[in-house]
Image (cartoon, rainbow, N blue to C red; front, top):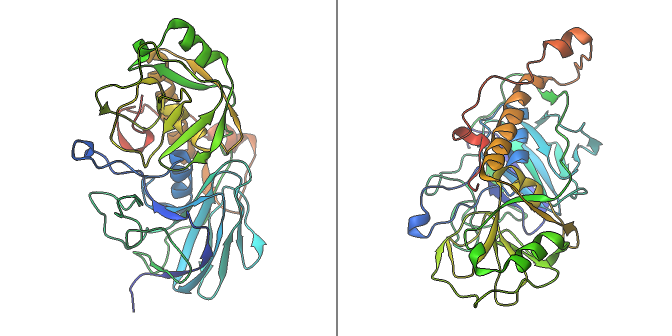
Length: 348
């Protein structure tokens, strides 16, 4: 019998997978990062169950699932895209963790306000990392559960039999930002005329049905190239905006390849990657250019916001909105190195 608690998969969407913060430092060997599409949701879900924010969790894409605790006790928390967590048919408050006991069923509803939700499990999954990560990269068959997405009948084992501490809640969960997706121009913006670049920012695009963890193809006015669309293949990052021969932008996501041979007109900044990842097919998207300094400042602001969430955690069911409690919250949380830890994603 496994030492850790166990969770069985009763059913789930075909794109349900195990993802952590990603697999980095191996692009020179052709190994992409994978990892959670919305790393902010991963971070918050893990904080709610007391995990390291980079810990592997279950990622749901549009469709939820049903699970049953078979042995032990499991503290879990769901966050992202407005999906609702229920235990034995009873909804759990948003941004709140709950301890579930053997024999009880857990349901994750469909995502309602985006594409991706993360279910964190206290103590983490008893899966061996592959090349430094537990994230599934489905096209290469590495990581995840036996190198594949989850399906009915799978048995997940946790590293601990019982959770420690209290169930937690967030006093004030962050509100998703609105407005255009911010990008840095380049690195191949010189492959486009000034008029073409202006059109890229002036037009409204929509996420097409050809969108997955590898990339989002956008529908909208074609962006013409100045002198052809072939370049010597070079490195790409999550958020690279390629313009292929058709002229319709493709935004590369976490399961992307590591090099590409189409000009990249722009790159989504780190602070906006999660927000873009949550765009649903058919949803409109616009872009706006920012400076490198603005991109760095936005990344630091995001890091401070996520760090400040630690100070807002409190035992579930013990909500205290008194002025003394609110004035005592440290909403800055001190200085954060924007180049360190889990608060920054790859990108710009």
